[in-house]
Amino acid sequence: MPFGYVSPEQEMRDKADFARKGIARGRSVVVLQYENGILFVAPNASRALHKISEIYDRIGFAAVGKYNEFEALRLGGIRYADINGYTYDRGDVTARGLANLYAQSLGMVFTESRKPYEVELVVAEVGETPDGDQIYRLTFDGSVTDEHGFVVMGGVADAVAARLKDRFREGLPLTEALDAALSALTEPGGERPPVSQLEVAVLDRSRDHRKFQRLTGPRLERLLGGAPADGTPPAETPKAEGADDGPATAPEGDIDTGSGG
Image (cartoon, rainbow, N blue to C red):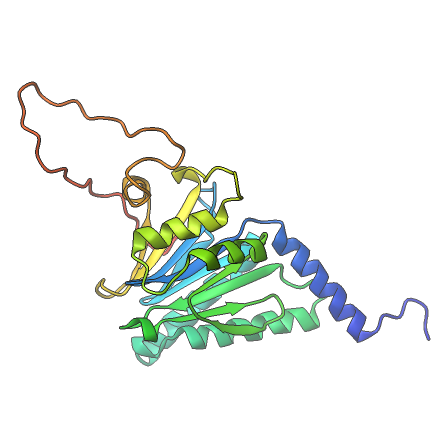
C-alpha cells in the first residue's frame, strides 16, 4: 500500500466531520410552520450578512455555516428561478426544483473537492393551504430531507429541536410560533437576544404575489409582546395636554419586503 494512502471511506468520513464541525460553530436557525405560512428565525447581529432571504415569489431560503459558500448557492438559486420563471412560467419555479439543484451542487463539491462546503440549507415554499407547504433541508453532502412542522439546523441543533418539540403544535398563531422559536433558541436560564440581533421573516400565504416579508423594528417588538426583547420598556410618546386617549396607530415603514441581499 503506498505511503499516505487514505481509503475512500475514510476520506468521506473526514470530510463529513470537517463540515459538521464548521456548521456547529454558528448559531442555530429555526424554520417552522405557523397558521398562515412559514416562519424563519435566526439570531444574527449583522445587518449586512443575511442568513434568511427570498428566492422567488413563494420561496424562502435559510442557511447556516460559511457565509461566502451559502451566499454563492443563494445567488445561483435566484438565477435558476429567474431564468425558469421567465422562460416557462412563474408557477414552474418550485422549492423541490431548487432543492434538487442545490443537492447536485453540494454533492458534487463534497465528492470532487478536497474541502466540502460547510453549510446547511433550508428551501421552503408556502402553499395555498398548510398541506401545500414544503420545507426541504439540505446538508453539506447533498442529502435532501422533506421536513414537516419545523426544522433546526446549525449550532446545537439537537438541543434546540428538543426544546422546540415541547412547544410546537400545528396551526400556531404567528406570535406563539415566534415565542416558541425564540424559547427554543435560548439556553435554559439564558436571556433572549434583543430585537436588534434577530433576523425574522415569514412566507405569508395571505399576501399577494410575493409572499416573503421581513419582520423588523417596531413590528417585531409588538409581535414579541410590545417591548424590545432586551427588556427595555417602550418609550412613551408625549401627549398634548387635554388630548383624549385614542386607539394606537401602528407605525408604517418598518417592514423590508426585499430579498435580503
